[in-house]
Image (cartoon, rainbow, N blue to C red; front, side, top):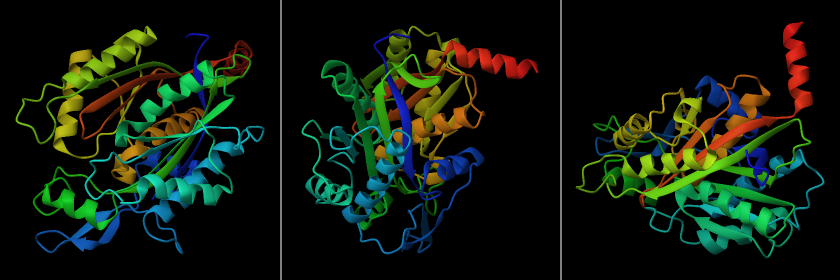
Length: 352
């Protein structure tokens, strides 16, 4: 691992199965969900199910997203109180512009509401990343530049997204993409917020989650195209990530994917895994929280942090995958780095 690396230090989550990282990740680990009937019906007049965040006394749309995002940020900062929010750039990950039913005031309204929730203006180097599912992956690349290039002490990546609104549900139902009557391979709409505290790697720390291999590529065979699906984009992204990390496919112990229940996404994942010879256990956050769009990257890294903390991590090298409807595919290799003192203590405890 390179000395010039970035580390995900802590995370915060607000989801339909837990309002904090520990409870949400416990539900993810056990494959629990909190799906229930929404106030919508499909073409057969059967109720649609979803995974909303059941917060009371919250306004709709952007206001709710801002409250969820602010809570996630506070959770991520709780473990490092010396990090100043005022001096820390925020990278805000949201739905892509072409998302069906995208909230009209999302871009300006969410910033404004989030500043109100946090009680201060955003840092001048803050920016919005409107890429949907691949937003956190791109934000990590931006964070690397801010930390290693511009010398910032810390960067907060925050994501807030929802598929629980009329425009998004009706649009995806008409497109045959939601789980509904006659559609077995569809996704369950969800919503969530997440935050990651990202810092420069510090070899003096006992444990660090390092991001040291990233790849991205475009997939031309989208779900609504007539081009045969070969998984070229995801395959290329995985290959790039492995090469940058100097890791072989056999070294990867775990895969976290944003596959959400649609047959197209699972077929693409299977093709890419076969072509890159990735054969690992697969963790899917959507099994518990549904489709959460831009928040999926936060869910993946938060889950890794909790799995290491609770001692149920499969090996060490992990492949994190994401792809949006625009065709962008991202892959990241992450691993925990342990200090020599930590390793010695762990070995001693196992030998007792």
